[in-house]
Image (cartoon, rainbow, N blue to C red; front, top):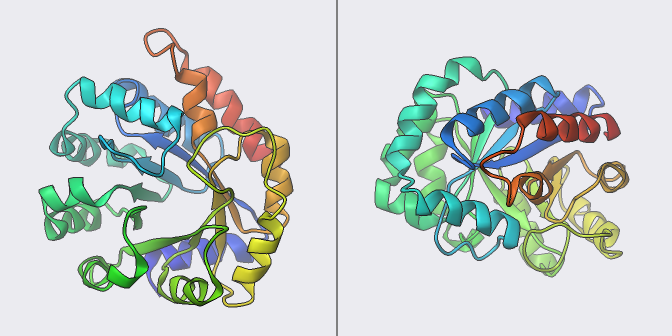
Length: 262
């Protein structure tokens, strides 16, 4: 078994619902980002997902798009993030997964980035714009370094592709809980339970739900049917528009509340 598979299976065997907060790298500043990761760790997060900023994030709603634009306008470089993480990694004990669109990693070099991930014990990577039919060459690149390539299933995914995606997803399956892009929503789509049932009919791999999970009540509701919950836009929303004066403690309190709901 790969490292991430062992991690997610151990969480499930404990009867625990995984809580996975998402942060955009270096948002709102490099220092704040570091403090947010530590806050996630101290709040009881089981994993943390780090998004690599990209100029054309087709799956991201306005909050995460804003965070990417904010960081890119300040000159974000992937090489700078890698240097930061190599230094910071010793302070972060929880597992880490990366979310990136293909272009930044392609430009940097897939093997080169996979080497970095392996050296820094980063467990998995997710590419929202990578069709499962094209995943083979990347799986080989990352798999040989004990890094899981995570796949996404949306409510609109047809049964044949659900089976294919489930077969190829490693570590866990990222279940998109709504139609459309990421973002804060007032309620969970009624068809989500049906989507979960369809996926479970093809696989027993851990299912982690994300996109639009905004409140502790929503998280608790969804967690009844899945193995983990991923929360991103609701975290970014707390900081948006207050990048220069927000307090990490506000995010930490939200994280603790979400963890408690699970």
